[in-house]
Length: 94
Image 1 (tube, one colour):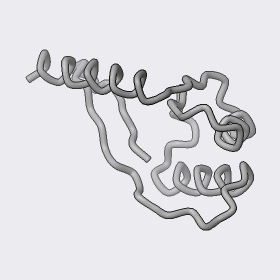
Image 2 (cartoon, rainbow, N blue to C red):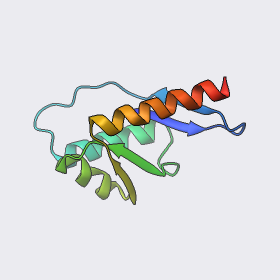
Image 3 (cartoon, rainbow, N blue to C red):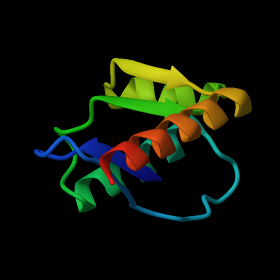
Image 4 (cartoon, rainbow, N blue to C red):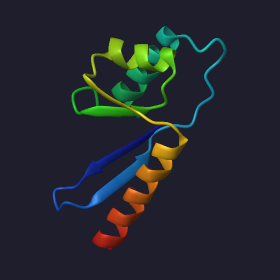
């Protein structure tokens, strides 16, 4: 799980919050509990604006159940485009 934000100086920032293997099966409830716990650990419960995820039903449901209204679905092509945009922003602020 990676978190992205814009600093007070309008700099693009990011941090890796977690790398974890979720045990099978990957049900929406298990994903929801993992994300809720992670947000609580990092004190981010009230600071999330949107999630970027793949288009799998279990993840879509977990984010919906979390109460996040904006969810951007991302396939590999979109993910590559987002990464290029992020690299461009980092170059512009360096």
